[in-house]
Length: 489
Ligand SMILES: Cc1cc2nc3c(=O)[nH]c(=O)nc-3n(C[C@H](O)[C@H](O)[C@H](O)COP(=O)(O)OP(=O)(O)OC[C@H]3O[C@@H](n4cnc5c(N)ncnc54)[C@H](O)[C@@H]3O)c2cc1C
Image 1 (cartoon, rainbow, N blue to C red):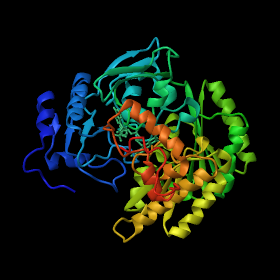
Image 2 (cartoon, rainbow, N blue to C red; image 1 turned 90 degrees about the vertical axis):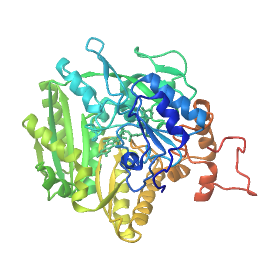
Image 3 (cartoon, protein in one colour; image 1 turned 90 degrees about the horizontal axis):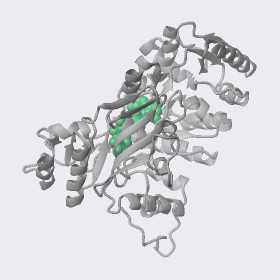
Image 4 (cartoon, rainbow, N blue to C red; image 1 turned 30 degrees about the vertical axis):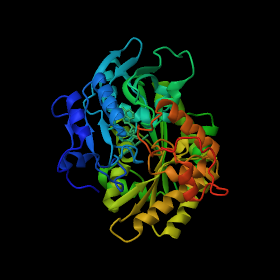
């Protein structure tokens, strides 16, 4: 890691020439807060941090970086869990912290136009007076930005029913590395041409900088109630998830917490969880009072049939929020029982939940590390929290190997190595497990079309074929990699 500069590098004065005073940080004490995102095991202070105040200034920053051949790492709130916003030693971090204005909120068309640095929850707060809200609700919603949500295609507890970011964003304005502003999508239901909006959402800052987002707003349901169902063993709980969906019910939320998780979180938030249960399911119904009453009755019957023990239904809005607060605070609560945790994020077909959870239990023994499971069960999106102590020799290495084996198991049962936290630097080697060389080559082709010089968030999300070869997941004949014509970034 570099020491303090004696003389700021030339990129600093070039950025200072195009940004207002105070919008370029380069001293180590100022860049240090940007050295990592939520994946704090990996840190690197950047060369400089640029804080543009409007879209023209974003373009100016990109122009300067392109001119100097300096990589650019976009950053929202830095809550990402896969190292997507981790800086490069020779790169500039472009922070959207000052682009935090709600441009327009149209209750008639149920849309909001917002700058990328607006916090997820701030959109719902602004929409609340009109009886509307923005549905995707990552547990980090109090802090994370809509630009980060677009880049990661973020999800949340309510995405089972209401969809992920990709289903709730109509249009984005993007600053390209070539200095253009392009609009992807439209305010109508469809846009002419190829669906580049879908390509862009989830592209982890590698294709362009989001400068404005048009989101859909949905009416706040009249009523919502949540069931807390207890299970004596994890497998029965996991199978109950499949039973709910098989019964034709799409709950507003369907989350699972194992005993380690509920015991970890209960002293932190006093959610009222059943601490004797091996697993609890939280199943929410929302809609009109009649719809909710009917769905709660149907879900309760299915859960009982599937082997649930105690079933508690929230009787007030305060109690509903209390049940959810435990789930939403599970990650921070991990800090109460372990100095460090490593949050994995893999998605599997729901029918394999029980098998994969059993596999994770065996890995706890193999790696001699505890793991708390708290996750979006309805989506089959797992979040194993591997608990470790980075101060103990080789615990981080064991936690990483544990995580990689979980992801390999997810792929083996037909799932994916990420549900919503992205690939970033964390899961880049697992991409070699998930995809064949031809597929990775196609991803690079898309990256190259948007960013020919490879300056936007390089070395993230897509592994080079060389990297996969080193990782042992690519068969190289006579030292020759396939597709030598493609850029290596
Ligand atoms: C406690 C906790 C709970 C979480 N719960 C959830 C959850 O329930 N669901 C979920 O999906 N995620 C969750 N996350 C992960 C994280 O909050 C999301 O990935 C979120 O979308 C990141 O937003 P951010 O503003 O912090 O982005 P950052 O972390 O700053 O950046 C994330 C990625 O987006 C890129 N990026 C940021 N802004 C832009 C932009 N304007 N243009 C282009 N690229 C950009 C960055 O380069 C990086 O690759 C959680 C994280 C924490 C710490």
